[in-house]
Length: 130
Ligand code: AMP
Ligand code: ZN
Image (tube, rainbow, N blue to C red; front, side, top):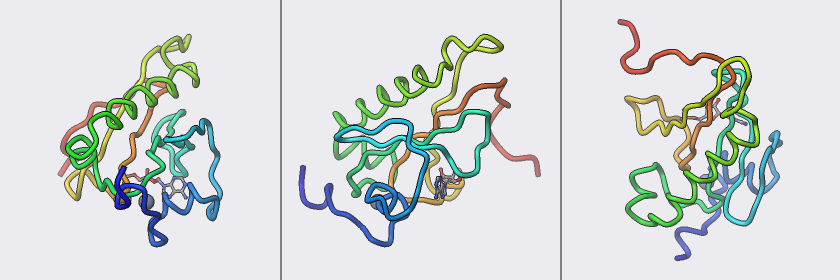
């Protein structure tokens, strides 16, 4: 990894969560990834999975700069879903993995993160009504 990819950015909310400076409900923690509950859940289960390293603003940049880490982030998302019981959830099994990318998708934190959503039937996605 380069120094850019490992840099801690003190102005970045998710770097501050990784550093323990902002509290979060952590559901999974290992060398390269942290998973924690979204503070404003959009489904009964809503977990964010991030690479601990700063340096990738969105999924496109992550895939271009570090495809191996991108692949492992997807596996980590699937593992979080499994840990949360979503693939076998009795009422309605399954889940959704989402990367919001830039303004059109409403990205607010530019430290790449994977949303893991489930625990209920999920609405369709696409354009907001307008
Ligand atoms: P995005 O809109 O894709 O950039 O997602 C950013 C997500 O971070 C949103 O779903 C927020 O609800 C969530 N979020 C913001 N602050 C916190 C926090 N302190 N702890 C957990 N999740 C947060
Ligand atoms: Zn960061």
